[in-house]
Length: 189
Image 1 (tube, rainbow, N blue to C red):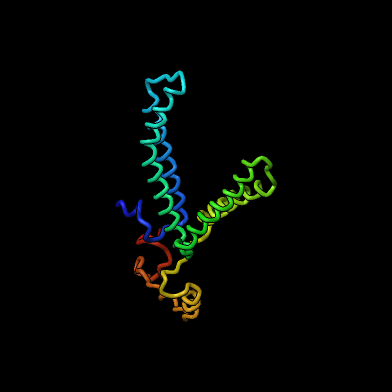
Image 2 (image 1 turned 45 degrees about the vertical axis):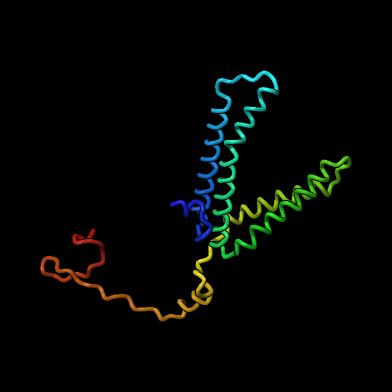
């Protein structure tokens, strides 16, 4: 059962990816809200010295939740990429490298004394790239190929087969007269 959540093998279609991602987001949000509530309940910090231990406790419990969230997210993406016919070992590291480079350039420019339009453009391109790849994960149709033969020749071979004639209709006796059965069921409903 844990293989279905944490494993990187297999394929999932668009609907399964959407529903599992939605469930992952809802569960992670609920766990984080509970952790925050447990950490803060009964405490009314008045200065920064009292807030720091609370944030440390929250981070201590939130770190495993976030690591599990990232792992499950990558496993969902890997299975969805495989269903799309893309190689996850190439796409995911490329996506991460794209994000790191563009965000580093963008944030370095924004945080400098003289921000340029290039840094803002890099951050915009990074965001658009993430939206585009997320849209591909949600809307790109899965390949029907199981890896044995390409999908197009298999479809062409199926279309090249001759059509079979329709089966002859059976007749059912009704009051001694044979009437062809053209409807469903015994009573002709």
